[in-house]
Amino acid sequence: MSKYIYQKFLLNCNYEDININDFPVFEGDVKCILDYRCDYCLFDINKTLIRKISIADIDEQVDTEEDWNQLLKWLKEFEVIVLYDYHVNSANPIIQSYREATLKAYLYRFQKNEIKICLA
Image (spheres, rainbow, N blue to C red):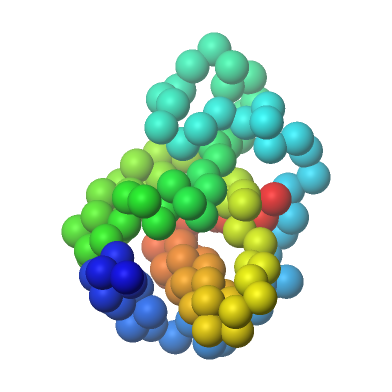
């Protein structure tokens, strides 16, 4: 529970205006994309530098605004970030609502920092 208290900075933005359906959907196989922690390498044969990150990875790493800024520095190295495992499914309406708000807050903040996101 304390994690959510630390992450309260995240929801301090206009995430309500975000429509998840407005974001492009990645058509390929997510398994074929390198993790965001991988630097440029031989597998980067496309002209577009693309990496993937899951919501769980973000949740594990980001507790404070400083953590968020560190993650942004890393992600700005790439042209497209594929966000996967983002689906919000919970029987508990409070958890469902919080997860949806968190996803929208991430998307809002990525957009604000000009990080191109595709959903998978």
